[in-house]
Image 1 (cartoon, rainbow, N blue to C red):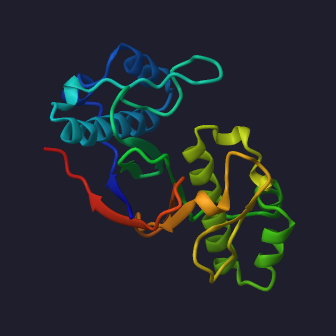
Image 2 (image 1 turned 60 degrees about the vertical axis):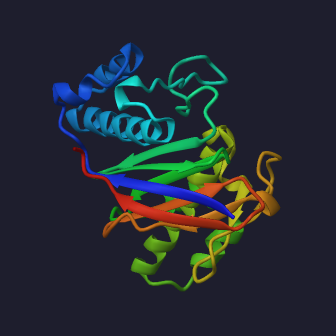
Length: 230
């Protein structure tokens, strides 16, 4: 049994007490965001992730250092990890939701999206393949929107779990349709094997859709918590 814990939070303010937990590279990324809400989302993701990692490592959050080096370009925008640690982390944020998922060393991907915006045909054509688009036929507008964001967050989650992100084409992944249990049906990319991929729907609150994916062939148990800073 693979156990995964997901923590949800709302954006923290840009207070010195939180900014002091960022290292120099993270402060550079934080300052690179033009809008304050984007700064706060990034800050919250890092503070929450360092708090969770610190609990696992027996350290204060300020003593947790992440390596977020991108495997492709070497820039610090890759998935955060603690070198040598026996756990895996994934961070995602959208709107007023920031999430951090952690597993005991199994690759994990988390994606949360604001699910209230309209899903037009161009967006559906961009993200979904023929099989998935056919599954939307006959649905009401509300059902269609919900199904689309379930597909979208599921694809993002499995791609993030591989560490390759959008380098895997969205349409190369086929997920189970509306009314079915979440699962990876097929993948044209060798980084994803349906037999070794587990997916779970999450509950980030009204107006949001979120999905978790782990690369493992065991059953998945997920627990979700809301985090309140001390």
